Length: 542
Image (cartoon, rainbow, N blue to C red; front, side, top):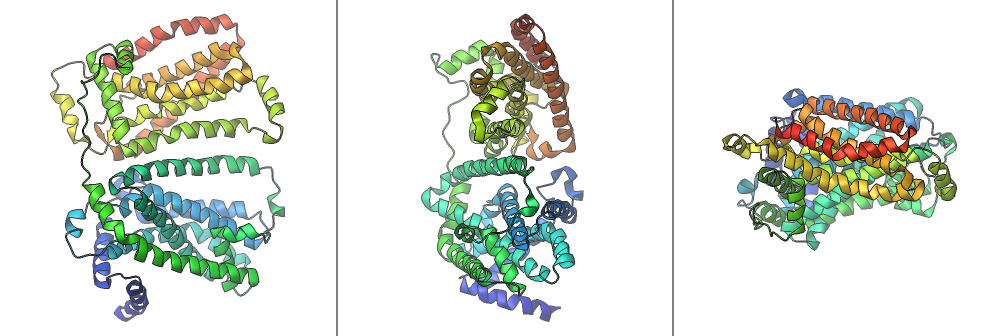
């Protein structure tokens, strides 16, 4: 067994030395990291706790890969099939890298052990890359396993070079993403690096979400079986086409185009590896050290506010007690400083707009005709339904990475501690939900006119009231008092489904009200402040 292991390790050691990596340090650190990994549960499936194993995750990824095979089965051109699959693989692997493994790449937990040691930046970066590659390769193989069987059955031994292409694709995706990270670190300071990276992750998550939702909607009526791969100049710019050409050439059925694509693949992978580890890795140690020891920002105490500030006037108008004002300020302070909370809340604005487009499916070739047809319908309620995304902030404010300070709630000498929760809920609705609804009023008034405003206001307000009542019905914990991994529990998923179901019922009732006389909608709108007051009182009186 040792001789077999040496047979595989020796060529890799030569590559590592060529990249400027200390081989002894590399293997010692990599072995330690892999051993530690299997002593804690994986991040992506916290709902199963420690019983959730990597094997179970891979089965789920394989099932997803099977769904892709069913989609590609309608395509008759092999080159197009391979290009689409590698495109899916790059997008999915990139998504997993963003959501799961960015924290692994820039993990600060072992700084006190590693940074004082004589370990070079190249070695540290190489260890992190290979560490992530181990898991990304497993995911890539699981995703591609059904398609591999499909190729074995219908294409023969082309499946073997396809598997090699999958591994190269996983490595290319990794060096592409990390190469962007390291290039970004050259443009901003190490202290601001994670903030900039956080906003980039949010933007990319929105783009991926839009692709998943909109592309299938606009392609479902297309005759996919007639699609054929065409040799056009811009195809040489697509990485997915490179790996498809590599697979075709390695199977022995390639052409001159496939030879060119194979050369591009090898140059991109090899040159990218050398550029990343030898040139861009120079500041990797600085990123780990400075971002982990960034000086804390000087902030004013929560109670220090100018009496003439408009924010203070808003708080005095909307909050019924000083504790409620404190809960508002406490929530907003976390929104500004908690990166993970931003990743959960900020994309919801874009998700809401994406779902509107997915539901309405506008015809951009005849936009005026589409608007005229829309004006004669009741689809303005879709804006109210998707506006529910603006209330997501309420469901995430109980969770934080540092819940140890929650003992202060039990030590407070007051029976009104749930005023803090009421104030935090108001802050989330005022900061996220209200701006989204005001934004949607623009297209609603433009398309349907002001006659539908009472119904829209009624639906939006009742949605907000329902989100407040759900806090009481579900006995949500106090703000930032629970560990963040609790948010992925199965119970939380059931609560989300309950909320969506109730919103659907609520919008159905609003639609029935819209069929009646408009005076009923106006009368109900007059009662909304009283209903809001009762809903918040239900939280404060817990």
